[in-house]
Amino acid sequence: MKFVSDAEQQETTKHDVVHINQRYLETASLLVAMSLWHSHSLKGTLASPETEMQQIRREVMLGWPADALNQATNRVLYLSGMLDNRHDADPEQTGKAEATEPVTSKKHSKAS
Image (tube, rainbow, N blue to C red; front, top):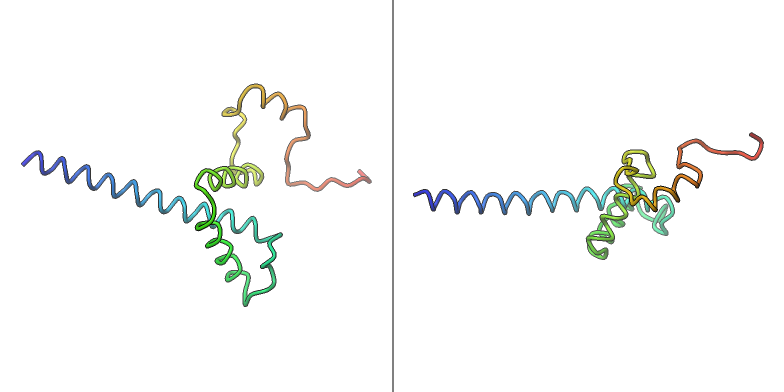
């Protein structure tokens, strides 16, 4: 009976991993679509912004490789201040990043 329990446990774990991966892809594609919507050619062309974002999301889910989606998700999270990857970065890249202007949500004007 233990063998059956182990097999069931492994099948449940595989199912959970598939479900988690599916949820990640759905969430990541929505996040990227919301970011892309601001400059996408569909903006303002469909019945509502929600419809436009869902169309962009479908394009992202069906057309983007998983690696590209992951990189885009990380970039959106980083640029929006939800992800601080300084400690994960390559030391060489960190030095380059410190030499550039930090990414902030504040707008800079020439008058200031």
